[in-house]
Length: 362
Image 1: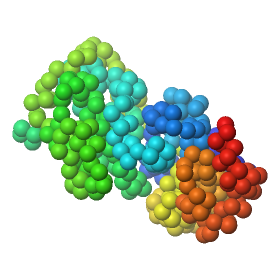
Image 2: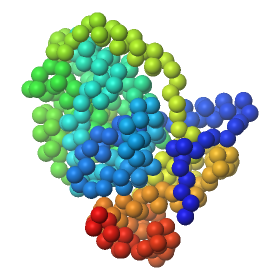
Image 3: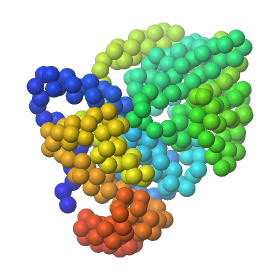
Image 4: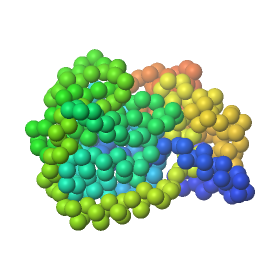
């Protein structure tokens, strides 16, 4: 079977007006630096084949080390969900967020680290986040004695992801502890998503009441914290780094081409039956005809991308997760197990069971 390397695929040439419409469309697809995936991969490195995990979103070790490569944010959400299953960890996002390093966020992280006060650090995070990702936004709301630091996804094409959202909020809490005191704790933590079966890990991680089904995602804390000094403050370095970061923020980031954006939505929709033409078209706010035409202009098609997504995910499912062939077939969107079995043999030359045995040996 032919594989389509979407990361390196070159978009077709368009007339100026069509290119402008394409650019506007792609600017609405949330992206993030590919190196954001590293924290997810590192968290499960001891649990299995990271090559197969990265392959579920078409990446490899070189890609997540690339300092400039951007990917659709939906791919980060997808791989977080896969990694959670790989680790059998119902609180995976929370645990990843607890271990994140400020330095891993580049100029954004160093601007936060060198701030003089917590207020300055949080405002830097609000202002400079678009350098890292345009998938959502932070907001700092001060209401008398209580402050809320809120996180919201900015695009309708991004479904609420519990692991990704909890990773984000746990990361903010970790940053505040690194910057001030390891003993710091918020008054409350809010999440929009519904309460998981067991929320004891959330209470442990945040050391505060955690409420679910709330109007938004937020850390609530004493407003007096805003004036607290930062232990790693360096006003001169902060000015230099922040000025440079603002220049980066003013530049339009490179975005994945249309094919890559569609593929990321297909990957995400495989599990709930939302990978069809109609579902993907709705999430990109284009018609079926427009979606098919634009894929054709990039020498691709919806059918080919569904096959690629299945090919990538099938290796991971069979080699890394304790699922049966029947479960794998339905997870990949096949109408019946026999169709998956025949497709798998066509892709890899052996049966799913033989592939699993070979993966265990290696």
